[in-house]
Image (cartoon, rainbow, N blue to C red; front, side, top):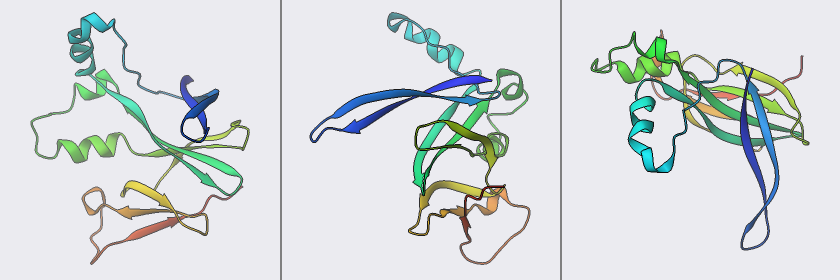
Length: 158
């Protein structure tokens, strides 16, 4: 598995204090390749060949912390895609969907790669009932609906 760090901070009034670094164990995470600051052009050249994974949010839900993320698209897969195609953005989102990892209050990872509905969009919010609420993107769906569709997702232990 690939390890992706999350820096945890706590509020100190008018500033943040470092608490700990937590690592997500995410299989097949696509990293960006860091380069020296004075060689930024190398970063963009390498970065254009793949799409790196992205931690998109952290949510407190009951006694759990949910991290939402995308894994990215590898160089091999991105090479098969046509960036000039008007549907590239939707194809990209289909190949790099949002997933979730779950942590307990001490940031021990208890689950990873939990899928959201195939046609779910971003951003997501948590309501007062502890449900993740996300809208449906009809462009990612195989079915058409009238009006806006919202998914209300509840974290359940199996």
